[in-house]
Image 1 (cartoon, one colour):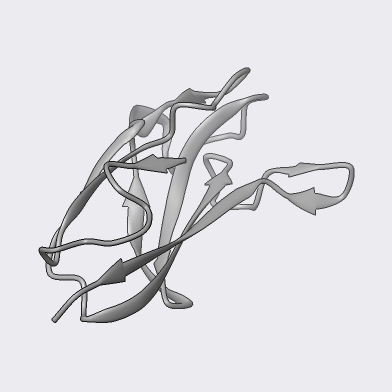
Image 2 (tube, helix red, strand yellow):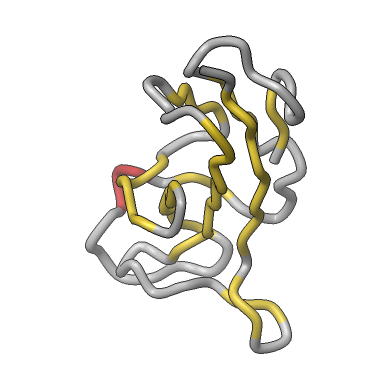
Amino acid sequence: MGSQDQKQRKHNQCNLNAYQLTHFRFTPEQVNQANQPNMGHGHLYINGEKQGRIYGPWLHLAHLPPGQNEITVSLNANGHEALTHNGQPIAATITLEVSE
């Protein structure tokens, strides 16, 4: 997961891109249906609180609070179960610093 600038944000918003995804396909049309291998959606967490679902590789974050913000995206199956690799959830976390 990358951002326009992972160190310092002068504004309280940024764009994220899940550019390192391989062997996974976003399938919003299949949410809440039977799980399929390597398909599903993401869950977005900001500072440990779930904010919603992600249905594609690009995401715009607006209105981030000043200070450090921990942004986590997890990959989830159609039924919302966490996807795992070697028993560990597949997720990426970055910290964004938003100036006041």
